[in-house]
Amino acid sequence: TPKGDLWIGTWGGGISKLQPGGTFKRLTPPVNDPETNYENAFISSLLPDERGFLYVGTEGGLAILDLKTETFRKLDPKNNALAQINEIGCMCKDRDGYVWTGTRNGLYRFKADAIDWSYNVVCPENQMQYFSQTSAPSGKTHLPGNYIASLFEDADGNIWIGTYGDGLVRCTKDKNNGFTFKHYRHTDGLSNEVIYGILQDESGFIWLSTDYGLSRLNPQREQFDNFYRADGLLSDQF
Image 1 (cartoon, helix red, strand yellow):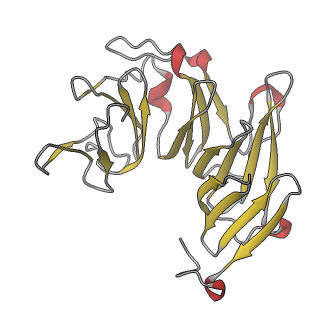
Image 2: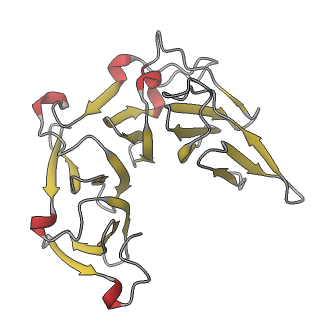
Protein backbone atom coordinates (compact mmCIF):
# COMPACT_ATOMS: atom_id res chain seq x y z
CA THR A 1 0.00 0.00 0.00
CA PRO A 2 1.12 3.68 -0.24
CA LYS A 3 1.99 3.62 3.47
CA GLY A 4 4.24 0.61 3.03
CA ASP A 5 2.01 -2.04 4.58
CA LEU A 6 2.23 -5.52 3.11
CA TRP A 7 -1.08 -7.19 2.26
CA ILE A 8 -1.09 -10.72 0.87
CA GLY A 9 -3.90 -12.34 -1.07
CA THR A 10 -4.19 -16.12 -0.86
CA TRP A 11 -6.16 -18.75 -2.75
CA GLY A 12 -8.48 -20.02 -0.05
CA GLY A 13 -7.22 -18.14 3.00
CA GLY A 14 -8.47 -14.59 2.41
CA ILE A 15 -6.11 -11.63 2.74
CA SER A 16 -3.48 -11.10 5.43
CA LYS A 17 -1.57 -8.06 6.68
CA LEU A 18 1.98 -8.46 7.95
CA GLN A 19 2.14 -7.18 11.52
CA PRO A 20 5.19 -5.90 13.45
CA GLY A 21 6.90 -8.95 14.90
CA GLY A 22 6.19 -11.17 11.93
CA THR A 23 2.61 -12.24 12.67
CA PHE A 24 -0.32 -11.85 10.27
CA LYS A 25 -3.79 -10.38 10.62
CA ARG A 26 -6.24 -12.28 8.46
CA LEU A 27 -9.45 -10.91 6.91
CA THR A 28 -12.06 -12.58 4.72
CA PRO A 29 -13.88 -10.40 2.15
CA PRO A 30 -17.68 -10.29 2.61
CA VAL A 31 -18.30 -11.65 -0.90
CA ASN A 32 -20.31 -14.82 -1.28
CA ASP A 33 -18.73 -17.72 -3.12
CA PRO A 34 -20.91 -18.45 -6.19
CA GLU A 35 -20.77 -22.21 -5.50
CA THR A 36 -21.03 -22.45 -1.70
CA ASN A 37 -22.68 -19.10 -0.83
CA TYR A 38 -20.15 -18.70 1.98
CA GLU A 39 -17.74 -15.77 2.26
CA ASN A 40 -15.13 -15.98 -0.47
CA ALA A 41 -11.54 -16.51 0.64
CA PHE A 42 -10.11 -17.01 -2.87
CA ILE A 43 -8.17 -13.85 -3.76
CA SER A 44 -6.99 -13.23 -7.31
CA SER A 45 -5.78 -9.62 -7.17
CA LEU A 46 -5.16 -6.60 -4.93
CA LEU A 47 -5.12 -2.97 -6.08
CA PRO A 48 -4.43 -0.03 -3.71
CA ASP A 49 -6.18 3.33 -4.11
CA GLU A 50 -4.61 6.63 -3.06
CA ARG A 51 -7.71 7.49 -1.01
CA GLY A 52 -6.79 4.82 1.52
CA PHE A 53 -8.74 1.87 0.15
CA LEU A 54 -7.76 -1.51 -1.24
CA TYR A 55 -9.67 -3.14 -4.09
CA VAL A 56 -9.81 -6.88 -3.45
CA GLY A 57 -10.63 -9.13 -6.42
CA THR A 58 -12.09 -12.50 -5.47
CA GLU A 59 -13.58 -15.50 -7.19
CA GLY A 60 -17.00 -14.27 -6.03
CA GLY A 61 -16.64 -10.59 -6.87
CA LEU A 62 -15.20 -7.26 -5.74
CA ALA A 63 -14.60 -6.16 -2.15
CA ILE A 64 -13.27 -2.78 -0.95
CA LEU A 65 -11.20 -2.59 2.22
CA ASP A 66 -10.89 0.64 4.21
CA LEU A 67 -7.19 0.58 5.13
CA LYS A 68 -7.67 3.04 7.99
CA THR A 69 -10.24 0.96 9.86
CA GLU A 70 -9.28 -2.37 8.25
CA THR A 71 -12.92 -3.14 7.64
CA PHE A 72 -14.75 -3.81 4.38
CA ARG A 73 -17.23 -1.33 2.92
CA LYS A 74 -20.67 -2.61 2.03
CA LEU A 75 -21.52 -2.99 -1.67
CA ASP A 76 -25.29 -3.07 -2.05
CA PRO A 77 -26.28 -5.02 -5.21
CA LYS A 78 -29.54 -3.06 -5.42
CA ASN A 79 -27.93 0.29 -6.26
CA ASN A 80 -24.22 -0.31 -6.85
CA ALA A 81 -22.74 -1.27 -10.21
CA LEU A 82 -19.59 -2.56 -8.49
CA ALA A 83 -21.61 -5.42 -7.00
CA GLN A 84 -22.34 -6.85 -10.46
CA ILE A 85 -18.66 -7.67 -11.06
CA ASN A 86 -17.86 -11.30 -10.25
CA GLU A 87 -15.27 -14.01 -10.91
CA ILE A 88 -12.41 -11.48 -10.94
CA GLY A 89 -9.01 -12.56 -12.23
CA CYS A 90 -7.01 -9.31 -12.50
CA MET A 91 -7.16 -5.53 -12.03
CA CYS A 92 -5.15 -2.47 -13.03
CA LYS A 93 -5.53 1.29 -12.72
CA ASP A 94 -4.60 3.47 -15.70
CA ARG A 95 -3.06 6.95 -15.81
CA ASP A 96 -6.50 8.57 -16.14
CA GLY A 97 -7.76 7.05 -12.90
CA TYR A 98 -9.89 4.30 -14.41
CA VAL A 99 -9.92 0.85 -12.82
CA TRP A 100 -9.93 -2.01 -15.31
CA THR A 101 -11.22 -5.31 -13.96
CA GLY A 102 -10.81 -8.57 -15.85
CA THR A 103 -13.19 -11.43 -15.11
CA ARG A 104 -14.22 -14.76 -16.57
CA ASN A 105 -17.24 -12.98 -18.03
CA GLY A 106 -15.65 -9.95 -19.69
CA LEU A 107 -13.90 -6.69 -18.89
CA TYR A 108 -15.18 -3.82 -16.72
CA ARG A 109 -13.96 -0.21 -16.55
CA PHE A 110 -15.00 2.47 -14.07
CA LYS A 111 -13.68 5.85 -12.89
CA ALA A 112 -12.49 5.78 -9.29
CA ASP A 113 -13.36 9.48 -8.93
CA ALA A 114 -16.99 8.72 -9.84
CA ILE A 115 -17.44 6.52 -6.78
CA ASP A 116 -19.25 7.91 -3.75
CA TRP A 117 -16.71 7.01 -1.08
CA SER A 118 -19.23 7.24 1.76
CA TYR A 119 -20.11 4.17 3.79
CA ASN A 120 -21.81 2.37 0.89
CA VAL A 121 -19.13 3.14 -1.77
CA VAL A 122 -21.67 3.56 -4.58
CA CYS A 123 -20.73 3.48 -8.26
CA PRO A 124 -23.63 4.53 -10.53
CA GLU A 125 -24.58 2.22 -13.39
CA ASN A 126 -23.85 4.93 -15.97
CA GLN A 127 -20.23 5.16 -14.77
CA MET A 128 -19.51 1.51 -15.56
CA GLN A 129 -18.37 0.29 -18.98
CA TYR A 130 -18.48 -3.35 -19.99
CA PHE A 131 -16.56 -5.04 -22.81
CA SER A 132 -17.20 -8.61 -23.92
CA GLN A 133 -17.01 -11.03 -26.82
CA THR A 134 -20.48 -10.09 -28.02
CA SER A 135 -20.97 -6.46 -26.97
CA ALA A 136 -18.91 -3.31 -26.58
CA PRO A 137 -19.63 0.37 -25.82
CA SER A 138 -20.24 2.78 -28.70
CA GLY A 139 -20.26 -0.01 -31.29
CA LYS A 140 -16.51 -0.60 -31.03
CA THR A 141 -14.89 -3.90 -31.89
CA HIS A 142 -15.32 -6.60 -29.29
CA LEU A 143 -13.02 -8.90 -27.35
CA PRO A 144 -12.06 -12.29 -28.82
CA GLY A 145 -13.11 -14.02 -25.59
CA ASN A 146 -14.58 -13.19 -22.18
CA TYR A 147 -12.07 -14.91 -19.88
CA ILE A 148 -9.54 -12.19 -18.96
CA ALA A 149 -6.40 -13.44 -17.20
CA SER A 150 -4.06 -10.41 -17.15
CA LEU A 151 -4.04 -6.62 -17.65
CA PHE A 152 -1.25 -4.07 -18.15
CA GLU A 153 -0.94 -0.39 -19.13
CA ASP A 154 2.13 0.38 -21.25
CA ALA A 155 4.22 3.56 -21.45
CA ASP A 156 1.99 4.94 -24.22
CA GLY A 157 -1.24 4.42 -22.27
CA ASN A 158 -2.40 1.34 -24.19
CA ILE A 159 -4.13 -1.36 -22.15
CA TRP A 160 -2.90 -4.87 -22.93
CA ILE A 161 -5.39 -7.63 -22.23
CA GLY A 162 -4.30 -11.23 -21.81
CA THR A 163 -7.03 -13.81 -22.22
CA TYR A 164 -7.34 -17.43 -21.17
CA GLY A 165 -7.37 -19.18 -24.52
CA ASP A 166 -8.11 -16.34 -26.93
CA GLY A 167 -4.75 -14.61 -27.23
CA LEU A 168 -3.67 -11.03 -26.65
CA VAL A 169 -5.55 -7.76 -27.16
CA ARG A 170 -4.19 -4.22 -27.44
CA CYS A 171 -6.82 -1.68 -26.36
CA THR A 172 -6.17 1.82 -27.72
CA LYS A 173 -8.16 4.98 -27.04
CA ASP A 174 -9.27 6.73 -30.23
CA LYS A 175 -9.76 10.44 -30.91
CA ASN A 176 -13.44 10.21 -29.90
CA ASN A 177 -12.54 8.73 -26.49
CA GLY A 178 -13.77 5.33 -27.59
CA PHE A 179 -11.61 2.23 -27.88
CA THR A 180 -10.34 0.00 -30.63
CA PHE A 181 -9.08 -3.54 -30.11
CA LYS A 182 -6.25 -5.26 -31.93
CA HIS A 183 -6.14 -9.05 -31.55
CA TYR A 184 -3.00 -11.20 -31.63
CA ARG A 185 -3.28 -14.98 -31.93
CA HIS A 186 -0.96 -17.94 -32.32
CA THR A 187 -1.18 -17.47 -36.07
CA ASP A 188 0.32 -13.98 -35.60
CA GLY A 189 3.37 -15.43 -33.86
CA LEU A 190 2.22 -15.55 -30.22
CA SER A 191 3.66 -18.63 -28.49
CA ASN A 192 0.37 -19.56 -26.81
CA GLU A 193 -3.10 -18.06 -26.42
CA VAL A 194 -3.29 -18.42 -22.61
CA ILE A 195 -1.55 -15.35 -21.16
CA TYR A 196 -0.83 -15.24 -17.44
CA GLY A 197 1.29 -12.09 -17.12
CA ILE A 198 2.24 -8.93 -19.08
CA LEU A 199 5.18 -6.54 -18.54
CA GLN A 200 7.07 -3.93 -20.55
CA ASP A 201 10.84 -3.49 -20.47
CA GLU A 202 12.89 -0.28 -20.78
CA SER A 203 13.23 -0.80 -24.52
CA GLY A 204 9.46 -0.87 -25.00
CA PHE A 205 9.11 -4.60 -25.67
CA ILE A 206 6.02 -6.32 -24.25
CA TRP A 207 6.79 -9.60 -22.43
CA LEU A 208 4.09 -12.24 -22.07
CA SER A 209 4.20 -15.32 -19.88
CA THR A 210 1.94 -18.00 -21.33
CA ASP A 211 0.80 -21.58 -20.96
CA TYR A 212 3.54 -22.60 -23.39
CA GLY A 213 6.57 -20.36 -23.67
CA LEU A 214 7.58 -16.74 -23.13
CA SER A 215 6.72 -14.24 -25.87
CA ARG A 216 8.35 -10.88 -26.53
CA LEU A 217 6.39 -8.49 -28.72
CA ASN A 218 7.79 -5.50 -30.57
CA PRO A 219 4.66 -3.30 -30.49
CA GLN A 220 5.86 -1.04 -33.33
CA ARG A 221 6.64 -3.85 -35.77
CA GLU A 222 4.05 -6.23 -34.28
CA GLN A 223 6.60 -9.04 -34.34
CA PHE A 224 6.98 -11.81 -31.77
CA ASP A 225 10.08 -13.61 -30.51
CA ASN A 226 9.36 -16.74 -28.50
CA PHE A 227 11.43 -18.52 -25.88
CA TYR A 228 11.03 -22.03 -24.49
CA ARG A 229 12.68 -24.52 -22.16
CA ALA A 230 15.07 -25.42 -24.96
CA ASP A 231 16.28 -21.80 -24.87
CA GLY A 232 17.13 -21.99 -21.15
CA LEU A 233 13.81 -21.37 -19.41
CA LEU A 234 13.12 -23.52 -16.34
CA SER A 235 9.74 -24.49 -17.76
CA ASP A 236 7.55 -23.91 -20.79
CA GLN A 237 4.62 -22.91 -18.56
CA PHE A 238 4.70 -19.97 -16.15
